[in-house]
Length: 469
Image (cartoon, rainbow, N blue to C red; front, top):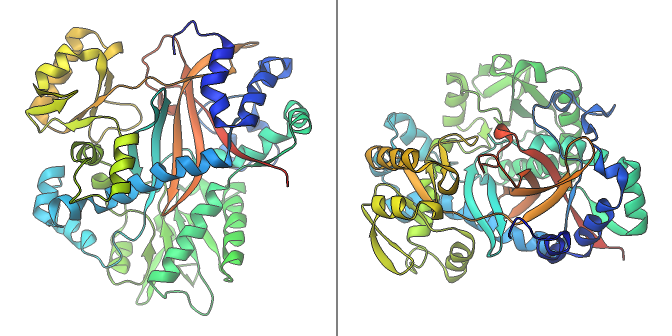
């Protein structure tokens, strides 16, 4: 959408397709002075400690989607991670040497041990980064495993709806407003996986260990997680305890790992801490279940998405439904290990295409994160862009992706005002279920064009809305 688009055009394009409530809220917020001023949702009395010191800004306005749109997003948000999970088999016939050579894995022995473990590949936890465009929702990347950001804002979901302006809006627009509980979905998925695949629970007991920095182990953060975990246990008819600490709190025994004398059945590692040898030994002996993807360095590699894009129409690898999802939701993406590529009906030398059509592309390091080593053609000087292309051709561990512009959104900006923003939709996938949608937004004008919390984007939560029965 052009920068001069009217507010009515923005609402018609970016909000109305998401349902009645998103459109109504946008118009309500435009005329509600209280929503033109910033609000610090991180000052709520009942927030856990990890959110009181949250490092990223939180947008004043929440976001809404109706349940039909939520279910529509669920398709690419779950199908694409499932396909990435199958890429080693579909493209490499599960050959360890071939996989390690392609993705640059040096420790082949450790990779082989983890990759061939009987529990490997059972867990599909991912956060997708999608951009809503004039051509629909496009997947820019998939971050596999729980070592991903965004779930933390779960803790402020109730705070959004408690503010007086939101209370007035909900009274005027009587729908069911559901802040999807990503932690509860995460724990439910973890317990279900472990029960189906391990039989580790002892007499209805299932203890979960969350590896986290030591400061999370005490105070309200640990208590907050423990309360949500108890909800999940009740839904499974189990009882148990959640422990939250760094790996130093674990002790090893013949039957697995323990904390405070209690056996741990499952383990989550959202902070990405290095797995210590006793935990690896227990996992290899099948005495503790690691819910996370144990090889995120491979499965989160951006060349995974490039493989899907390059072979999108291959009926030998993908079903008709899978091909449709790739074609509709994955931008044209290629790895720089190819010298020639097909693009827009023609055959091109990749480096030449990248330079000549600079404004049509984004170039990313295959293992980059947090918006680093990412270059948007339309925002990068031509001389720097040529250097990036040369580096990508030389190093190979890069991808080039067709650029898509975000639809424009509205939100609170400055000390007293409303601004226009571009956004990235974060989707939390737990197996076949979409756990939550979460948005990061950056001002639409100026800046690098990179929409990432570590690059200054503000975060907000998407609520699912349904008519009252």
